[in-house]
Image 1 (tube, rainbow, N blue to C red):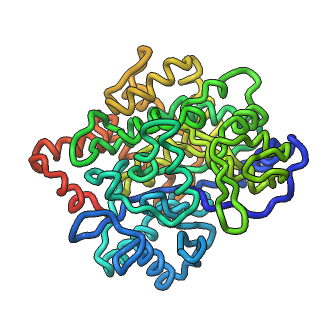
Image 2 (image 1 turned 135 degrees about the horizontal axis):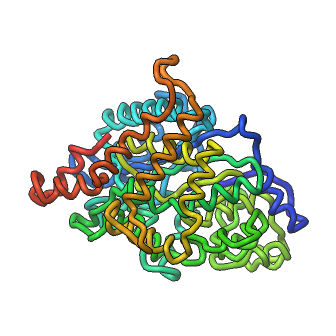
Length: 456
């Protein structure tokens, strides 16, 4: 999750909230690709999650990356809770999941180089302290009680709040991992079309990247339990957002939506102040109970936008949020999929033609079907496997049109990063299907085997 924002003057006009989003608009030549991915750390001897502190710990990982590779530390109080280097940062999810938020890059070739370098650094430090890291959508064997809590005030507040608004929020916080991509938009119209395509095709990403069929050592009946979790978390800040598809949608509609999402906190002087359930609208009037008489800054607004968790969202850029964390090839395939669909005009038009006839019931039905059945799911007469085939074909055309070469010109474009997805479409099997085959086959129900065979 996000590192606290800083800077930004006082908010004196409602229009500043809209202008904040509009300030993210960029000409096409300045569009970039930012990939985020999370992974679970564990102790190699016990197969239990890494604690925060100690010689074999999350803290030791961060300090090792700092000392060996020159990352600059980020602290909360006296605790190291993140790192930054050359536009990228490493942060911690609530249960110690290690997240790389990559630098804004120009192509998928660079993204894959960044992924490779990061995982190499992580493995080097992890090997030295007896730790391992694994890419899955949910923790396969651990209970909530076994998970450590990272020393971040934001997470302490959220943990207390989750049980009051849903029944799976703490599972999301402590026992899930994702891979996401952040993309740019040119203007309001471009943002609107991209967000609509992103939301409507998010179930395809969920299905293709489904990688969480286990919970607490057993099968859970879903290909993506992580996606299932998001349906019972907090209705006020999650979901497929039908209003985005209504006439007149734009930045102002997003602002009005975000203003109605209950607050979590206000960040002041290095501390998180409890504002759980309070209203940002009241904050604008100087009537926030947590800070009576005080009005927000633009950094408060930026922080608040990070507490909105739909399947796709906008800040100064757009985030695609529907995919499970997974193996190396999927970490490169996710940004390739969305870049191909959204960064070429003809591909974006084709993608919109593919989904513009879906109603809200179909979009939500596909979301549910993807979490349960992966590519075998369907809703409203729409097959996810067929939809995925069409979407990946459009993404391939978009990447071909971009024609960004790699390997010094030896690779003509970025389309090969979609190969893992094409293999899934051809076979009908996603990572969760492979995991289940092992579990019911050569693993004989011994889920501890996943750590040896699926770690980075």
